[in-house]
Image (tube, rainbow, N blue to C red; front, side, top):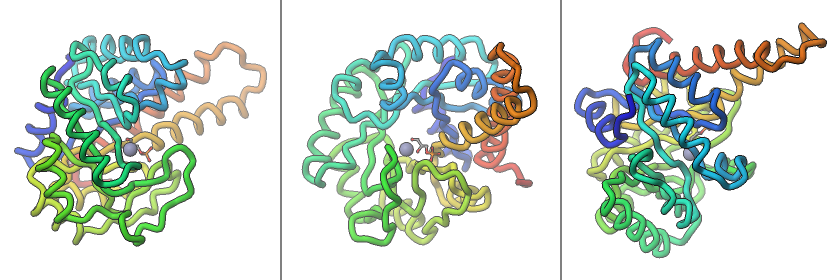
Length: 286
Ligand code: G3H
Ligand code: ZN
């Protein structure tokens, strides 16, 4: 069924788990996330990023409708989230019938402008019952940016500033920069666990880890145990999908029907989803 992001995150936090949120680019992503969630017996969040909307010609409605239909048909509890929204027009397109949450991303702005824009987004969201996530600090690696120097000032999230930011903006959840980076294809990131603990202490709202594709299972487990409540995964699904497509095309150069190679690729993506769900829900192996 289609459920709300806020309730999934609150339940997970109360139980010492986290919720995994997976990026949807195509219909097959949504299908794979639902299949992975059903296999793992766990809820999940389907998230559509502003970049994915741009890929679909700037049209949110078709891919959102597909994700909603997949969620409604699934036996797993699935929520729909709009991710990394920089455009206020796109924020306003997040219709509450489908989207229960939006990440409004003003992380490229100065601190003061970030607070102002995010507080406005929160006001808009709360009038409609939409849960709003925001980012303070810079996770980096989006849109092909070069990797950030994670130790440069202003890159990692400062706990005292984050506490003031949460208060001033009224956000429901906060994405923090603690050592992960977007679009990593190897799982080699190491997180600053001391910083996560200080942020957890200082910030009353749930914390969100972005760029989790590059974070090893054990590091994710420690972050969840320390109170990280939403774990965002995108690239790892595409790595699994594309590897399976490539293997099929290499083995069968005459294939024409996309179902022949998209089916195993979608299955590979579903298996990756189930693996991440095992980790964030506290499975022991990995
Ligand atoms: O908001 C989306 C996530 O941060 C995905 O990051 O593609 O590096 O896993 P990733
Ligand atoms: Zn992200």
